[in-house]
Length: 236
Length: 236
DNA sequence: TGATCTTTTGTACGATAGTACAAATCACAT
DNA sequence: ATGTGATTTGTACTATCGTACAAAAGATCA
Image 1 (spheres, rainbow over the protein chains, first blue to last red):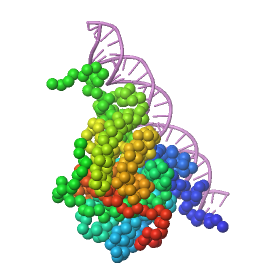
Image 2 (cartoon, protein in one colour):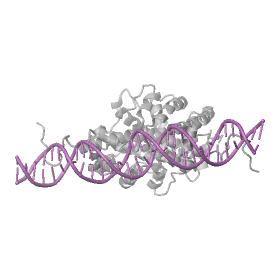
Image 3 (tube, each protein chain N blue to C red):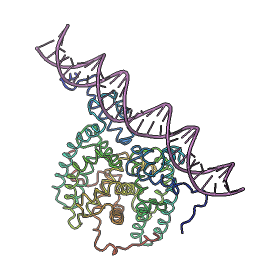
């Protein structure tokens, strides 16, 4: 039997507010912020443009609410996975577990909260590329703590690597992660159909494997950068 | 003595067309395509909005011309560097040389052509994130050849790694490269000022070092994915 | 049922978008 | 100097943008 909505969550369409949020998330994540109009969002959600104003006041407010809804559950899940990963004894295994704890939630397909989800991660990728102001503020506030926690955990597994190198490499990890979600088709194209860039499990395994190796690379000696052998960097 | 312009390249401002292209490149690369208006570009170039229409007909045409101008010289330079890298005998050294040949041109600071330049690379990153149609077409046409050439070269240095893995890892490389150019300040912030994310030489060394290690990671056995030890991937 | 609060609709307003086009201005060969 | 072709300017048109707001519709409870 279908549950009869108790009080608040009623409307002609069951929870139109959610539909608008989902539509906006999808459209922003695939086309960017400015390319999508409020009318586009309303149409995709089967709503009236005025409804968007009613629920979220402004277009920025809509984006803000998308972030607000995801950040809490996502960081919670990440710190859970991180805590579990940190309990791994073997240093090598722990490193992989930590990386996995960072990567896995970003790829979860669930359109609902809890874990962030691939769509929200892609949204963040696009917003950061566009230099969106609203997103920039939230990210610096919300994600830097998580990032530091992961960097610390990785540093614990690799004590001989300077923190600076860890920061760079985890930055590369996030870039690779973002790009895999933004243009998965490129992988399929370049591999001539042999790999499916849209398959999350595949992407996760590849990303974890490659990233763990990158973290384990020897430290980059900043004091004497000219020491490194440079074979074919000529012809500048 | 200042050269007197011969015939074509004359205007009140020496080559206003170039100024518009440069301004558009800068604005698109930092704010995205739709966030920048033709009037913004004209103002930044010290030109009249009508001038943009005169030279490039449409806003898409302007973006197209930016790509057209860079792609030729950039791919030329890349294949030069790649050819030089492929002549390196030692496999380990060759791999690093190939990666360097891929990375270095993308970071060159010169605002003028020849090498692509960081600004154009950042532009490509933003356009790919936004799913820009004009950019998508050009990229598939122009860059896939270069990408394949690099993938082949890397595969030659790592014969025991399946091509699929190489594709994934070079995809991650491009993502990391893009992200480093999009938000360099994040590196400075997370390293608490110890690293300068905006320093190209620094970024290149870190990226090359990490990427070479990633490429050298053991192959990911796709036939038996459950074989891999999985320590803390529980709690799904 | 009728009162009241929440939500949706429809419409409209000012701002700004991309682009077109005629007039003005320039560089330069004659 | 003057005519000519290339470029720049100024302006205007239409479309669409984000947003506001009053009216309609729905839900809830006395």
